Image 1 (cartoon, one colour):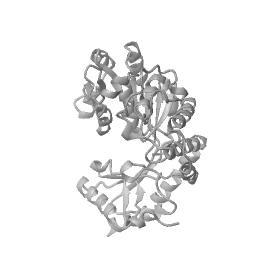
Image 2: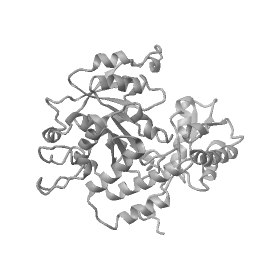
Image 3: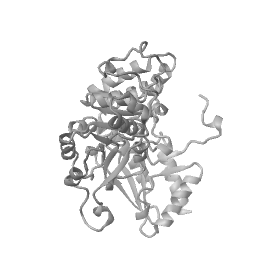
Image 4: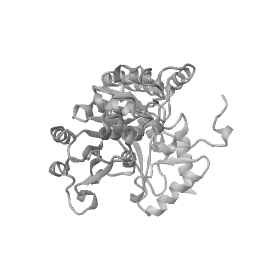
Length: 399
């Protein structure tokens, strides 16, 4: 088969970092690629296809409804738009200008990140809650439940919550408070699969909407994601993503939208630039089925074996101590941890840059470079690439 990258003059990288968007996500199984290729050979009504996929997502997650998005960030954008506009076509048409609409989204200040631009672009204004003293080193406290209660008012459209093990306050407690006040909680769970249980966990905890990535460890197309949650919010999100270039009298709504009681069809919504194609929908659903069917322990052991091969190959690397991090019950990929206690963070950063700029280009996880540490992940390595990672690291460190 012709190398499509070579035709464009682009060399593949050795990805020992993980399924990051900037590194083109993860690796798809052949079955997923085959399903996408087959889907490309026929035309379907996208609304009907979304409806069918959404019904299956709902059944798998325990949510009232679901839809496929073109990534987790798109899911956050569509979820925020749904929380602001509801099922009012005029409000949908007005976004991102939300004058007169509740458009404030509450968020623990410790959870603010680059990705919250996804919700701001639909006209939302993020309101910080609490102070992250435990991160600044000035204390041990974070945003607390009473602070969210005090921040909710008539302008509040939603609460945005980032799914992290250390996130505070507790999601179930926050969702209970939000439900009492009639405010939906939108969960950013982009990287929260695995563990498999998370597909249901956030909905079970009371979240109104949950956005997952489909292009990371689920193994779907890089430009795919999942949005699940309450029926009326998913209806709004889907309406703000679909193409509506059809007269209202000729429009045949799929089952999910038949009880939406619309006054008329909205214009193309703020989510229209984030459309998802038939290939992505079919690919995501195929990947999700394979992901859920695989034994998580077997998947983890496969990753762990790759980590062991790298750790064994790097044994005795000058100036480095090597350990493995991760446990099978966590289901997430283990990592090889390379500590360089005698090197400064700047020196470790320079080593990372040389690995990146050399040939072949080896990308590593640099998230702990400030601690003079490099992490090596197994999830996006192809067969035999562990040896390439070892060889490049030895060449750069020993040379």
